[in-house]
Image 1: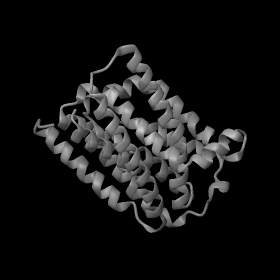
Image 2: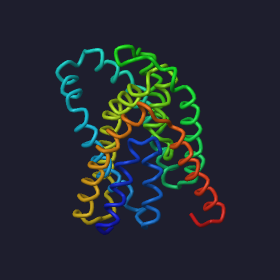
Image 3: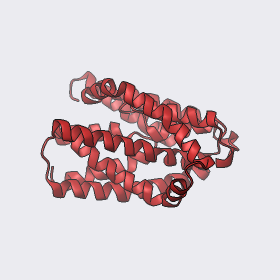
Length: 260
């Protein structure tokens, strides 16, 4: 992996982790095009660490508050949302890793992501709940959708924002809470991937390229979080839906002609 490839993959991870278009699905495409399929675990760990730094940089005040006040309402909501995500991830981790390696279903998953975003957009004007209005039931549903996004091309941010909108949470708060609950989810993914690296080893990659990819991922992840929150205040999810539908259709066609 050279520096240019690292920059491209870091940009893909940084933007697509927080835009509702699936980072894992896009990274699979990027790695496949660059011939880096064997480097999946190591590369994903470094790039995910970059986006973890990004979201921590945006929400450091909230993180500090929750650490100091672990029993606060916000801390409990994040914990409740994390529970179903962790259960789904631990129970089905091996199964979904097989799906992720083959990439056979990612075209269909992009299409499903688009459908969910389109449906959520039709509900977007009905939201009224702010953070203090979010219930444990809301948090559980959002966490369950986040767990479902372990499928390679189901967007984590897309599914959690959609779930929040369906629970009558306003768009800006939906994005805020989606990104907040991503912190333990991404942290868990990095820890699990790191453990796997130590136990199974990994395809060797230049450290300089990995560090460049991580930094680019962090920078563009920070930009994506800020931009997405502003976009959802007045914007629509339909553009993202159309985009992932287009990606899904292209992948299905390429798979059909045995080109991908």
